[in-house]
Structures are given as C-alpha cells and as structure tokens.
Image (cartoon, rainbow, N blue to C red):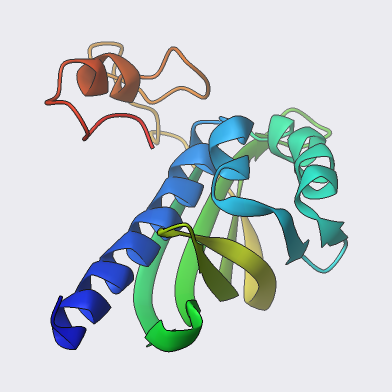
Length: 178
C-alpha cells in the first residue's frame, strides 16, 4: 500500500477509536470504552492514574452520578509513526455532564479538555496504549426553566435502551456497534 494511503487508513482507524470512546462514555457502555484500550493500556484522568481495568472501576460510579453526558471532539491532530506501529493523538474536547445537585436542582457541568494519547498498532489494530487527560477549564451552571424537551422528542438514554443500538443493528455488515 502506498505510504500516504497507509497513513490515511491509520488516521481513520485512530479517529474511529476516539469517537468510539466518546460513544462508550455517553451511552454508559463501559465494555465499549474498554475496547478502545489495549489490556495493558493506562489512563491518567488526574484523580485516577493506572491501568484500564482500574480506570473502568473508577469511572463507573462517577458516570452513574450523571443523568446524561455528551462529549464533543474538536481539533484532532494525529501523528503516525508507521514503521514503529505507534501514533500520538491530541484531541480537543468539550464534555457536558447533566446531573442533579444535593438540593435536587439540575446542573450542567461543562469541561474543556484534551485527550493526549499514545496509540499502538498490534496485529493490524490501533488502540490506546497510554492516555493523559489534560483539563483546561470547567464550569457548572444551573439548568434554566424551559430547557426540557416535549415528550414527543426522542431522547438519548444511557445504556442499551438508546436509539443508536437498534439503528446500528439494521446497518450493513461491518458498520455496526463500535
């Protein structure tokens, strides 16, 4: 394969892992999140630094606190070292977290961050070998009145009941979950 084409294929595969991670977090599918890392991969989220299994155990209760999350990926810079089967990716993101505070009031916690990742290609597959989450800013805002959707709107839900899963089950082979 031409080197430029091989670079494009590698960047596409890495981009897909980044998007799959966001889907896993936002749909609360922790096995999908786990699938983005190599089993010996590490994650540094500030209050947790360690292996992927420990990260999943750490993040589960934190994510359960939120009613909804949305992770939007922005600028993504991927540098691929084809001969060594490694890559570095810097991904800017804005993460929205809806929750109820101790008084029962809805709040939105919004954070600007960067995922700084080392990817490795093993047996032709790209996954995260090391992730550092660099937090840039954070704020929490009360949710104002009138911010709810009418009952007629399809709402995203966390877990297997979300609309994305039945839609993906009807897509052509090879384009489904993950």
